Image (tube, rainbow, N blue to C red; front, side):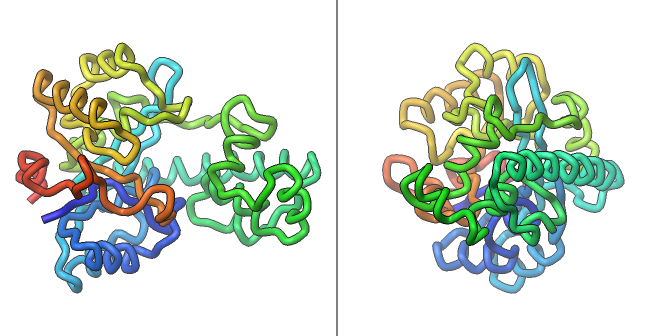
Length: 287
């Protein structure tokens, strides 16, 4: 049985509805699937109902945006009680903060001449991909986009030039829950706290081995996302070694957002999809 425990939907910055995500996973032969939208648990009822309908083991989760020593630290919460009052408090705080931040970034883009498609900003949870799409999907920006990028860019390319840290329209986040309170919140909601995409090549998340070791030693994480789409086999083996040494559960996550050409659903290791047996202890705790 195959699995993917780090997926996004339209509840944050993904392209698919929870039902569409479940149906896609079913077609690919996945059985265990977690919905881990950024800083919220919206549409979880739909996700769980779709899992039941299509015969998948749907796992409620969330990806928490935290920070440690100047780097973003994303914590994948798995098996949480999504109706927990602490979880609800957290997502409301994040939703308000992200809205303010997103509108500030959009205003900066307008200031330097980009047209904004305002319908892209009417999201329950406003994230940077939505800001990027507010520019990319406005027809009056087509000529400038082609001139600057050589083609209509995807949201990631646009973010790297305009909305990433150090770029002209970047606005820093004002609200973060630090790692330890985040983990305590996850545990209080009955969930497991997993270190998300530890081998990410994005500068914002590129930890380095020393930084990752500090994270593992300092905080009571339950597991690490050892299998990921950006990992080389050598990096995966390193993470598996860390998991064994520090008694961490092994997780797998594609960080799927619906962009199949760049990061498809499901993670492969040596050309084969990850099976539940490769994350057996984690699955046992989530079942």
